[in-house]
Image 1 (cartoon, helix red, strand yellow):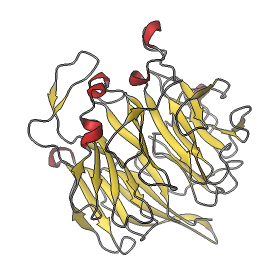
Image 2: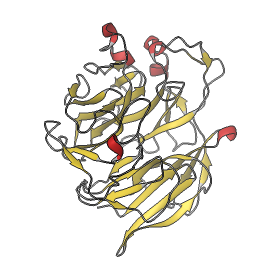
Image 3: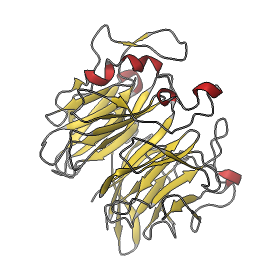
Image 4: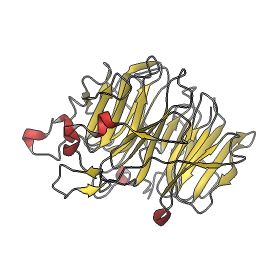
Length: 367
């Protein structure tokens, strides 16, 4: 089980470790800076931290010594003349990097390869650990990209990248708002992979259109990569055939709305969600923070609340604010109000971290 957690917050990156007295804050980096995402490469142990510095732009930092030192590397960049054309009627805009929203590693036999998903909806590849990046034109040049539009942000963005461990040339990405997509040739060619999802916010004739699905987060089971789970703006969906078809899961208590989802690393039928009130509110149902867990592929759910605040709790958990470690035992959730809770028994009981943190964007276990 992992005894180390990285927490990306509005005011820095924090390291928590577990000792004989429980979890504690051990170190911090970039204090005062907006750290939107941390990523650990299990192939070589490299750490990455993405920063959104407002007027100074997006930055990417790399550490080869577990945070003892950091080196600034390149970030994805759009060439002059690239445009974002959206399907919601907004006028075209010049494409420029707004947010580095997701990072994923290539295969075990692809040293140095990284994938990055950005707002405004571009997928990038690096083959030198982030020293340089190339736009994946196969996805960017799709005519269907003109149907994508913003969800919580003004522009569409790629927040989820799933690399198939059996064949790293098979990539699955999810877009808010633009559905899910799959490539089987390393990004050269793509096909839409969100059939079966339902967008209740669209007119009836377009609710099942795969191009307009607002996927909030997509995860795959490492031991069974054809098993994927999605937290969608309008519900929870599951695929058992590599995202060829999706099944809607209708009985998630107390709400099918949320942003975060995690799947057990070896048990594809076991997944966790953090439900909330949708749309304008976006707070826990009835002011009680809870985690929903299924162990039977969505047939039934346990509502896990022990150790979580159950009165006047208004903690929203973002897309990357829920994480599971490689053992499948430790989970962590971080909220927009700076709450951080860790479970060592698959969510049955939760312990609040002994710290008052800034708003949490993402949590990542260091395995």
